[in-house]
Each structure stands twice: as structure tokens, then as C-alpha cells.
Length: 210
Image 1 (tube, helix red, strand yellow):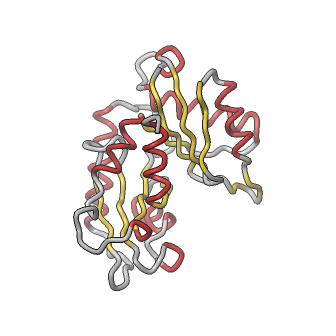
Image 2 (cartoon, one colour):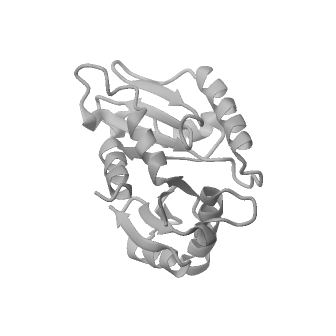
């Protein structure tokens, strides 16, 4: 059995909120094991064996994400983009945070924006994922970030991470920043979902069995 983390792009869709208990049941109906949710913001940790995770030559994470999206749409109504990372992948996101080594950084100011593969993309191979990551990185370098004093954003691609991430340091709070999920989706041309650092660390701990 392998442990995975699923991040739903949004849980408020079309004026309704997806209950996490219902999302959990959707994953369990796919045969996934040890399904746990964290908060009401679309975070799920689960386990799957090889047979449940892989379909032909499609990597496990892409196959699982597609299956979860279809099942949520079938059982709950809306189609919600889902990003699936292996458990050690979310641990890698924690380890790679470039702000950890900087003095005076408060964990409450840190966030991570996870980038998705473009919707409808059928080639989920590692080479293709790396190619898109390179495209996102090039676009990120060209951005005029609407950051105020003290705010910073750093892109880390895939590889080394399981999915590209924009690390954010927002000392004035996410709610007051213009470096939002919507900003990066619009400027980078891809879906994205953002989590605060406490959530990222908690998911890494849950995936590690803590």
C-alpha cells in the first residue's frame, strides 16, 4: 500500500460547499483505504495498492486524480480538479521551502500554491510534466508580481518536486495579498490550489503516519 495526498482545487463550487464526509465516501467507494480528511478545505490522505492506483501506462497519481474527479462529479455533482501527490512528495514540498533558512520567518506567513497539469492533457508522463513545469517557470520569471513590502514568491519546479509549487511569504496575511491563487492561475495559464503552511506540514505528517 502506498500513501497519497489529494488536494481539491476548490470545495465551494456553484454556490455550494462539498462536505468532506461526502468526499471521503467518494474515495472509499473507489476502493481507496485509510481515507482521512483535514479541515474543510479539500485535503485528503489515503492509501492505495498498485492495482487501484495504476491504469495501463498512466502514472498512479494521474490515474488516481482522474478517478477521484469523475467519482466526485458522479456522486456529488460538480467537477472539481484534483491534484494527487505521493506521501513522500508532500514531504518533499516541506523540505524544499526556500524560506525555512531565513531568519525571522514566521510559519504563519508561509503558503504554498500547487500548480496543476493543464485540463484535458492526456500525456501524464514524467517528461511531459517536466516540460510543463519548465513552461510555468519561464512564465513565472516574466511576471510583474503585485507584491507589497516584505512579500515574496519563489517557484520550484517538477522535478525536484512531485508538482510545481510557488512558495509564498506573506507577512501581512494571505487575505490582504494580491499574490492569490487566482493571480497565479491567470498569469501562468493553469489551475492551482493554495494551502497555508500549517496545512502543508499537517498533511505531510498524516502521510508519514504521525
